[in-house]
Each structure stands twice: as structure tokens, then as C-alpha cells.
Length: 212
Image (cartoon, rainbow, N blue to C red; front, top):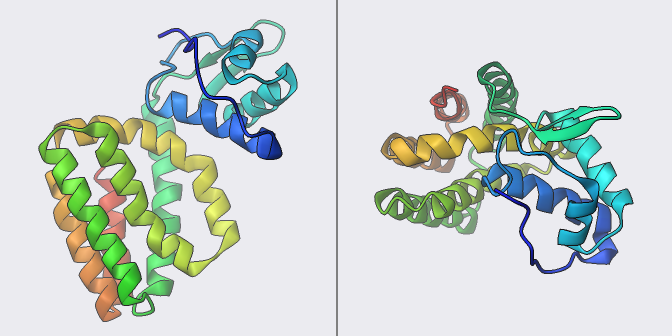
């Protein structure tokens, strides 16, 4: 798919992060497809920025495995590689399991309600085959315990490798998301009741239900 011809500009107050986020999201949601060549000039025109933040973003994306850069030749969107996805899944899953183990029994009713509401939206999206909405709701659900814990090192690891997993995860939601709905319900109940080890085990199952 070619780079979109029109798009809202990037907030220059957070230029580098915004450019990175926009390109990353376009790769994760399939706007920029595996194997597609990424040209600095085209991306700069799309986002309304200079080439410098584009190049910086591509370097960051290469470090997480979302793009493949051949110096002096080309930069392309990486293929979805099973080994790379499974490696990233193991790391991201371990971070989420650590977070729920530490935060179990400490979430407020408001935070638990956020998770339940997100899971309802996730279930509705899966039932209607709305993959984008399912993806958003799933991210919102898992973000609650991460944000509550406030471990910035853990957040950094998830932010680095999470998009690799999310890109592959969209395929799972298109075929079978009902298992995740039930696992989410189990996780929320365990967190509410303070069962740390069991919540960690369910979180492990949630992330390892993804097989690339």
C-alpha cells in the first residue's frame, strides 16, 4: 500500500516521538505493508516534517525489528517473522506478568472498571470482526496495570518490543478472540482479589496464546 497522500501534520512540540509513533502505527495496522520500501522524502511529505526526524524514527524502528535498513541502499518494512515475534512475545509477556504480580490487590475500583469496560468493548469488536477496535480495546485493558505500577523501565521494554507483537496479534483477533475475552475476565477477577501468582499465570497464558 502506498504512503497516504494526505494526513494531519505532526505536533512539532514532540516532533521526534510523534513521527516515530505515526510510522510505527502505520506499520502495525498494515497501512505500510511488509516488504514495502520506505523513502525519507515520501514519509517527510506525508507527515509534513523534514527528513531528519524521519531518519531518526527509522533507526528506532530498525532496532525493534519493524523495519530492515540496508545502509546506502534501502529501508523496507520487515516481514512478520515467526521467530522474531515469538522472541518479542516472550519478553513482553514476561513484563506484563511481572506487572500484574506486583499490582494484584492494589487496583482501585475505577481501574478495575476500566479493564472490565475495555474487555466488553473487546468482546463486541471480536464478535463484529472489527479488528481495529479489538486491537485498541485490548491495548487499553492491558495498559491499566502497567500504568498503575509506574515502572518506567518495564514500560520502556514493552514500548520497544510491544509493536512487533501487536502487528502479529491482529491476525489472531481476526480468527479467534473469544479465548482472550475469557482469559481477560479471569485476570480482572484475580487482580481484584489480590491473587498475584494466579494473575501472573493467566497473563502468561494470554500472551502465549499468540503463536506466530
